Image (cartoon, helix red, strand yellow):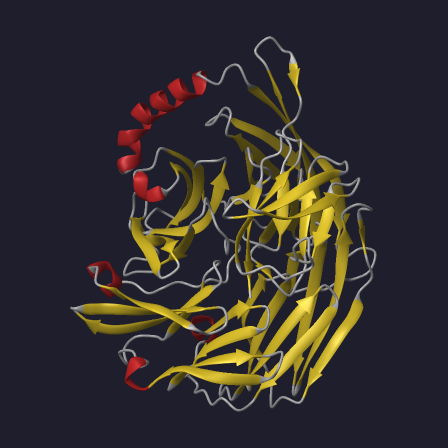
Amino acid sequence: MKAKDVMSGVLTVILWIAVSGLCAQQPQIDISLANYLGINMPFPREYDDVIKLPSGDLQFYKMTTGIGSIQITGFQYLRQSNILTEVVQIGSITGIEGTAVKEISAQRFGKYYVVYQYPQGNPQGLVIIGLDAHDLEYRIIDDMQVNSYFIGKDRIDIVSENHLVIALDDRLEFYDFASDTSQTLLDGADYQSSPIQLKRVYTMPTGHFMYVKDTCEDDAVENWYIFDSQGIHQFTMTMTDPWFSLSVTGWSFSSDFDFVHDRFYIPTPGMAYDSALLECHFPTPDSLHVFIIGAPVSPDEHLFRIVRFGDDRILRSYFDYGTYNGVYFLYMNHSPLEDNPEPTHWTGFGPIEPHIDSINDEIVTISARYEDYILVSALCTLDFPTSHSFTFPAPTVNVDLPVITFSHEDQLFMISDGRLYAFTVEFSVSNADATAVPPLHTLSVYPNPASLKGVITFKASLKQALELDIYNVKGQRVDTITLDSEGTAEWDLRNHKGAALSAGVYFAKPRNHKDIKPVKFIAIH
């Protein structure tokens, strides 16, 4: 199977030698089906989108477009009580011409954003929707002319809680939908790309965004104009590697809009599907480091997911268009990827799409919906590549129907064919002499990055009151907050004197609990 067969035997031996050193700590993993609900029973509940709220509850949305209007309804799955709420009317948007068409959607900065163009076939305006559970805000932008070739997913991005960037035909526009004002960031010769290239904007999980100017010239393949979240130009990068003449910058609207080991990743659809991605980080405030990483084996492989696996590893899921009927593969690399671009492990899934979710710092689940059963397999950092697999009977479905998964604390949720499945993942570690070791505990933070004008939520898997110290990158403590008996606390990103923090990187460290790892988060304007 291409280069995979050449590497498989040697790499498996190397991996098992490494794993043998962990025999003193054997993970005990059990996965059970905790709950099962029919979403459309006992009465119909229609939805288009579903997101996870900070509490772990699921929010479902239905957006119905008509001539001149958008109607929004919704309902929730409440995790603690295992119930589905009734459908409620969230809001109605009117005052638009014709029928609106959805362009993009993204969950960021503690909200869910949806952007529509209107009217269909001849876009003349945009509708920007911001949803916080059942709270609705929206703005109609009707003074920015676009043409029928305008592709919103290329040219629009959400850059902060209240800011949007739009690559129009003649200028780069920065829009504040809190104040309903805008400003031009680039125009003229500095702005115009080659007419054969699509204009592209991209938001980064560092509080930056960029405009990609592709000139199609040999000596300056691409220029990246880097701005902060307030629209202030920081610096410009010229990308001269020949690779950039064969690819375009992908979209940031995905479930992986986040850091993985202090770096973030940009897919680059190329001449042959998604044959590379860019590993990026800011070594200094005025410089961006970019490393090109090719597809692990085949240039026909398309990146599906990239998730953190422990303190120093990354799991990547790919779909290979070059194989018969298409096949999914999973690869493991140590982080950063540029230090070892060759894959160190792979697993073939065949044509069924695997869904990858982080349960905690040590465990990642891979789940898949087969015709008459569900497979949930756990990979653990302590005994990788051992797979802890469980199967659960389920009603017969068409395997081509969409499946959605979420994880929260020790639970995995799967939505398939109008049914919601909730799985519990139990994890503990024992010594070789079978002496029990307390379970590992985790600390999470949401949203991340967090707006300095908003609220951030901390959640520990250890359900008891404990103190959490907040430090800046200089190691200075800026505040101490207390988690409640459920291990939860909300914080308004102000220091112990009540003053707002500065934008930057911060760390939350549990006091007197060395078994809980600190968590890093970013505060942005």
